[in-house]
Image (cartoon, rainbow over all chains, first blue to last red; front, side, top):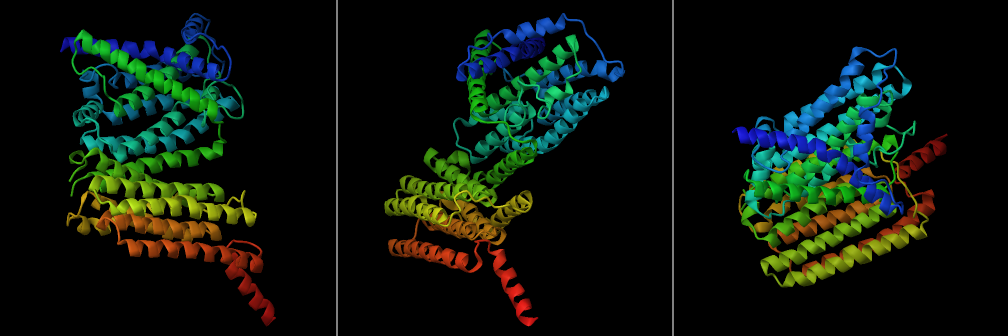
Amino acid sequence: MISAWLIALLQALLCAALAPLLVGWVRKVKARLQNRRGAPVLQPYSDLRKLLFKETRVAHTASPLFRIAPYIVFVATWLAAATVPLIALDLPTARIADIIVLVGLLALARFFLALAGMDVGTAFGGMGASREMMVSALAEPAMLMAVFTLAMTAHSTSLVSVMEHHLADGFVLRPSYLFAFGALILVALAECGRIPVDNPSTHLELTMIHEAMILEYTGRHLALMEWAAQIKLLLYGVLVANLFFPWGIGAAFGPLALGIGLAAVVVKLGVLGAALAVGETVLAKMRLFRVPAFLNLALLLGLLGLLSHVILEVGA
Amino acid sequence: MSLTAMTLLQQFVLLLAALALFLSFVLLAQPRLVAAIHVFAWQGGLVAAVTLTVAMAGDASHLYFSALLTFGLKALLIPWMLHRLTRRLGLARHTETLTRPALVIMAAVVLVIFSYWVVVPMVAQGLAFTRNIIAVSLAVVLIGLLMMVFRQQAVAQVLGFMSMENGLFLAAVSATAGMPLVVELGVAFDVLVAMVLFGVFFFQIRESIDSLDVDRLNRLTETNEVEGAS
């Protein structure tokens, strides 16, 4: 029992440690695709360290909430990431918290992020917060629809049961999984602020969403906010990789199984990150008012996943 | 029979049918005419692929021919004819403004649920592994009908009609493992003749009202009457 908790702790630390690496990898691949040499893969670590040791300044008009928000956002996102099985399946954290708790923790982080964006009272913060709320209000139902599709197949909302069920079934072509996969990819792009919805690499005032909310932060506050965003990207990556392709994840707690699990998840995330970089190079950012149509497509895919599960997959 | 009890080829048939249903939704909400024609071509290709896979999985050799016929007709010939028509009508870059697309999509989702509800007693009979597709094909038919009601552009309405035919063909393949060859050839030529007639009609409509927006057909007669009365 204690060893299980230790492994859960190890996995949570691994989540936080791997997150900047994933972002660095995506940036590197993207730079190479655009014929640039790009920053080293480990650059996000240096950025975080630099920010953590810088002086932290706070605006005069900021309330205590502005100071607390980075910690809440970071902890909630990190907790959410800790509930997703990364290298081993049978974790106590994943047994306690199911998919709905995961979505709730992410919503908590988003709520405080938006509040903090509005707190100082600058125009950009409020604009970013309202945009973030619009995107997330549309993305959340689509995400729930997609995960419910998986949950209906496994008859459980626990991520561990979904993955165990998938592993036990072997290779089955499920139309519902295909639709849920599409929906979850679209939601992940919107929630992590990646390219068709938000551009993570610019501070362009008219289009930014996430950057607008954290514009007033400096020093360690900014470091925590950035780190939380990186963990969120990792979380969605692991969710997509391990829910739909769970092969390789450690079913037992032996060092060999954990090692294979780690190698498998690193390979899967590497492939997903490269695919994300290719997508971001090929696509252009869409207008903000096109985003509802984009997320409607995600909702439709989720709904079709549910329906095709009921119509096509359940034996009469 | 649940999904895990099927062979991989049979699962693949269901996957293709589900994708054809998804393309029906895309067709319904695609405002660009040329893109919609491409979507229709893909749907025809998917229906042909379903037929081919059913033939391989169910060992029904006469379906190979109808798969070939469907592919040639629905995925190549008719889209090409429509393409040529839109170019000759000067509609190649035409974009239709859709009113409340999200609402229409939800109506289509309701149609899917309705067709499932209609088909449930039929499925209980237990025909073949393809019986689950009947609900999907009925939904494709109904969504094609919805598209004819909802779209104002005449070419888009024809696309809805043609995708209805796709749904009917899918139903025939899934319920009875294909119609007799004579019937199939007859239907294929009917569709082809309909396509040619539609082409003639497009030019007629455009000559008389200078547009292919079918809504203007009603409006024009009404104003004419008013003018004639006054």
